Image (cartoon, rainbow, N blue to C red):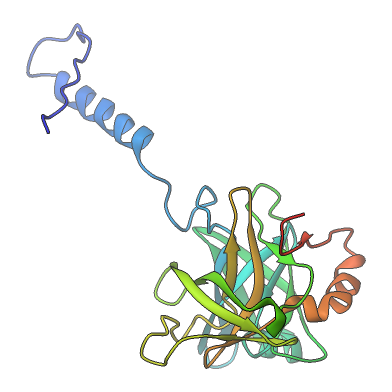
Length: 240
């Protein structure tokens, strides 16, 4: 393939003086215009996935995990990721990094069952992409469902064409330990069904090849979020 050459307009400056800085600036603008969005940015299809960083106020120890934005002021994660913030909120400073935007966590809420938690953010992220939630838990009757695993261990990573089997409260990743792409730090990450207009989360990673299905705890999620005036976007498996 031949190199594409772009002609630049005359600058009006004497050669060898101000031409080089100007051309450098033009080149930088062109590169920025044609650059693909960063996977961690809000333009990314996975922009709703953030890196959980929790710092203990006494020891400065750091706990890491993953969380997903489901409403402007709310994110969802695993209970064991958010437990320290929920039980000792004053001793744990938590931020969720959504591709360069660090959102402070105001409060964490642990679900009554399963490995699931909701977190209220200090400030709403209205312009940031959100992930939808599947409205009913998958069961064995639904068969093996194809999904994409999304996590933030070591940076944003995603793995398509995985398969899971729903079992009510939980879902199981149909894989082997060797083939499982999940890593330490992916807890709280998402199993999503990718659609053209949105991504639909049906399970939150708990570890060991299993995840908790938010749909099994829908009443608790809606009740917890109700006072904020915000709600999750619940959609059906068939996209209706």
